[in-house]
Length: 202
Ligand code: NI
Image (cartoon, rainbow, N blue to C red; front, top):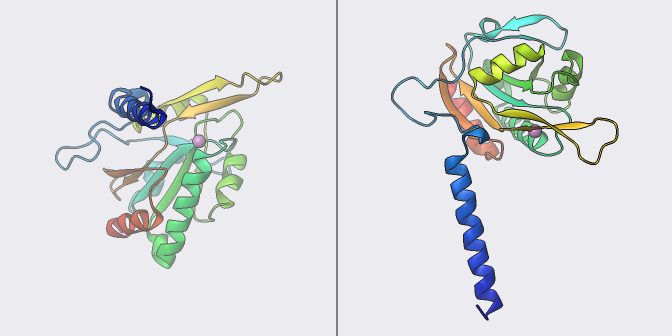
């Protein structure tokens, strides 16, 4: 094509098509199977055993009786996790005292660096209501599996000291007071929309 604008348009369309294909065909990105369906029971969630900021063992039973918004990531995440946590924090602020009726949880996918204390302090910097959870490598693998969360440790190519990052899917899962999956949101969800959906679950 001689017209550079046409060429740019074609390249853009192609990129869009590739992105759409990746979204449709990349289960490793963690799109929850069955999410968004209104019938049947989505196979997301279930029992877990983790550690809170004080190192105390906690399970899903400790959070039963209230809706739970559960999100996964790691404290060294440069952008996606902080962006999602900021949205959660803003939605909680918008709900005000009503937010006491639900439990927002951030589970680390990097338990080696994110000890219970580290994750606990990290989440408090966003909003004191958010509960940070860590655990053993096995604990984290189990909860990630239950929530269909993809994560993978990747070496930082520029590091000489063994630094690494963690690739991961970035969905927030809204669970009912009895632990049933209600809905999931991308980390880019709009604050008002998230606050509205949380209010509905309360
Ligand atoms: Ni992240």
